[in-house]
Image (cartoon, rainbow, N blue to C red; front, top):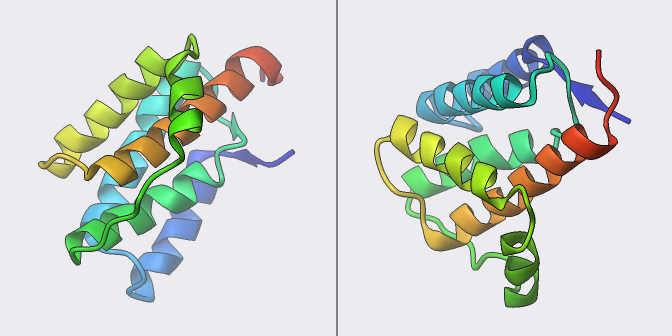
Length: 130
């Protein structure tokens, strides 16, 4: 299992930033989102977070250039809405929107909700504590 900590995330996103794959805003918002999630989960290493924190800076960069995605299937959305972690996922995405300074497009927001629900569930139910 891959565990992501702030140092590893900084290293990975700095490479993307230096290569102009992501924007400075995407970098900043993603790092803050990771710190917010660390605080909620209460661990310095977050398990199963690599997809979320790969998707997030790319999504923010895509949004800044006018791109969008369709989002996950409605059946998947219903499943995540029934998760006990949906409320916290909403809170995490709301903090991203606040730090971004604008609302996320619905498709991107729904994918982020899916990622957050999965990561939170894995870390609170199935993960090892430090």
